Amino acid sequence: MAVGAVVRRGFAGDLAGRLAELRALRGPAVDGFTGRVRDLVVIASSSRGGSSMVTELLRHSPRVLHLRAEINPFLRLAGLGHPDSATGSDRLGAEHLHALAPHVRQELDRELALDAGTPCDAVDDEQYALDVAWRITVQWPDFDLDPRLLTRLALRVLGEVRAARGWRAGEVRDVVAFHLALLEALRAGGLPVDARYYDLPAARRGSGEPLGAPGDTLVEEPPFVLTQPWRRADEHDVAHKSLVVKTPSNAYRIGFLRALFPHARLRVVHLTRNPAAAINGLYDGWRHDGFHAHRVAEPLRISGYADHRPQDRLWWKFDLPPGWREYTDAPLTRVCGFQWHRCHQAVLDEVAPVAADTVRIRFEDLIRSRRSRVDCARHLAEWLGVPFDGALRRAAQEGIGPVVATAAPAPARWRARAGLILRAVRGPVRDLAERLGYDAEDGWI
Image 1: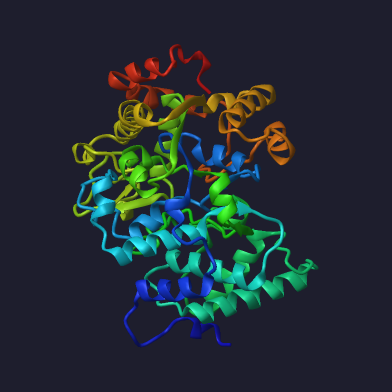
Image 2: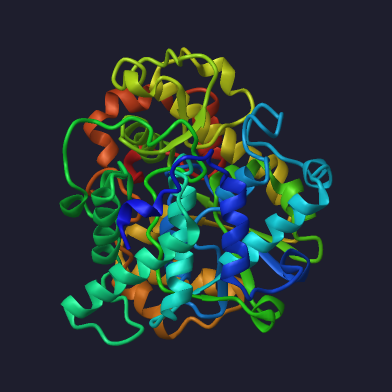
């Protein structure tokens, strides 16, 4: 098979049609998935607040279900992302779900059912290749990729990498190596895919001139995720296990999530991180090659961003809170402070009060020390009602590596630019930090 044949040349791209074809090929999955979920756990945090690390920790428990990554791509595909949602931000309510056409609602349910599950050690090659084809399709929506040929290419590359590395049947020991080989095969066919848009170790991402957005249309936000070996949830899983979702923008979607999972008990993990560290992470992310989230109509004039990355002036990064338009020409640190403040204020005002059960944990407790991390993980497991044993206990003891990191982790990394960052930790930000228990800056890590 010629790699170039993966692109269906000569006719207009139809992302919806390609995804419909993949849905038909990827089954089976739980029918009526969202109506069958009985326990929904929302990890509510600001962007760069540590939700990816907490989710990665919980993936070590076989008693918890997850989506492979965030829920945002599924909402965008259903027309529920900005600006299609017409809310002016990431906010969604029950009315937005009820307004969906029945076939779109069914497609959203099916896509979520095909994605929900748990990590596993061995794959069915055909199913794994189809899952890879779906992920590549939504990562590069402007390319008219033929689903069947893309699946065959993924199968071929998987076989070649497995043979070259001596893996056993069903093994995908090095997901990075497989994806790099697949991206290379796509590039050899003339597709301008770039490994630097993926969540890869720095040594394996490659280097070069700073990147802009990967395309005019985004379904998944870069850095793109890699398709890990995965076991899809079955009916027993959905009936007896909690489904964890962790997208920071969900702080503005609690009414929507209640409607999307109408029979689920809703619980909230309010994950906090001191504002200096979170704002510093946001600041790095805005100036990073990735994290493009929302294309805006007018160029942003955010100082520290628009002048640093002029190629990205049409892209708002990370979550899009209500009121964001007031910050389109503010200093970048102020924008980051606004994002931190608005998200946690929404959790306090809108999310936690309506949840059946809420627990608050600090990201600092997960990185302060081994003992602190184990104690925090044990407390979270007890609250979730899952055993604190096996792989989950080992992960807590050994620690979780960086997830979607913009720089090498270091204690209190924000202090390297403390003069800049602390200017954003004033007024409402400082007040809310104190309300969340963050007083003296000496203990902020």
